[in-house]
Image (cartoon, rainbow, N blue to C red; front, side, top):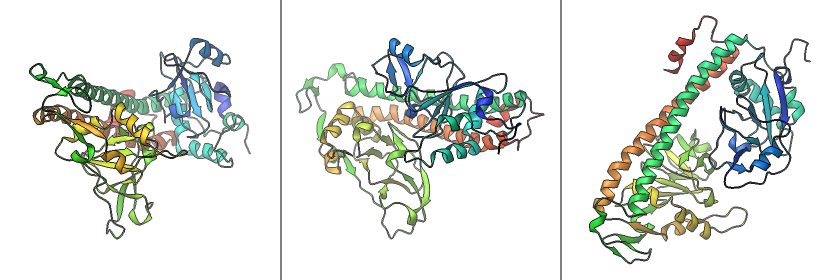
Length: 418
């Protein structure tokens, strides 16, 4: 039973409102429409976000205009994810989302964000949704969500500052990763699409199966310059643990999750071995662009049989990665996918695709430039992984009061982020 001193979420918020229960018409440009896939754990994911017109934005924000420091909660898939709206970003709510506006006189918005993402509240949110056929939070449960006792506002500020310091470092690294990705992709386009590679002025163009290409370059089948699914782990292997990647754990160009599991308890589809420089491409729904290049992998890295593992042979993996992740390659896979519910391609589809292979000296120069960019990107990703782990370890200790912040001064925050 809730006693009179117990706080519920509605007590510390100015408003908690539901989204429109219909799909907003979208267009190429305009205001971001935040749906559940755009809500991460603490931040908004704006890659490939739906966008809406000024008219739609005005219509979808009649009940409340989302503003900086408001929180957006996912009611479904994934239930319980929460993000905060940053400064200078105008958004509207997509389907299955909830807008939460904290009362800043009662609670620090960043603190409330971390509180809602903590284990205790997440367990409650998931318990509310477990009874439904489709996991779903209803508005009554959200508004009446019972909260643990809140520390005073000054302690809330300290907790928010400490955890935000981690978020700032992660965001800086994320920006650096994006810049590095754009640099490498730009070099590839300039050299191998626009043919403005070093010394291109002295090279004449000749006809090929792929149109005009520089003289001395070749068009080959992918199977001539790579091995597809070359290594498979055996059932009788003595390996005790594997680091496993399933299709749901990969998005465009990156690994979102690697799960360490016992090999004997691993799914039967956990079979394909991945080594340094291998490219993994989802064979199911290839239009989703679920792929990544693996650098310095964890020991015993295994991917699902839902991936094609592409190992470069006699060409740099850096070049092959871009050659098999172009829009043309995606289009080729999509056109060759079969099946209505889960369209998929097979290894033969990969083997028979035509790829352009530059002269060896140009490939070597490209690899020298881009491999260093890949390594810098990998280091930034590893740093982000460590920052997230440390933040996630600190979060419950700070929220529960296990770490005493009464005597902690703001300058000491750097010690936590070190």
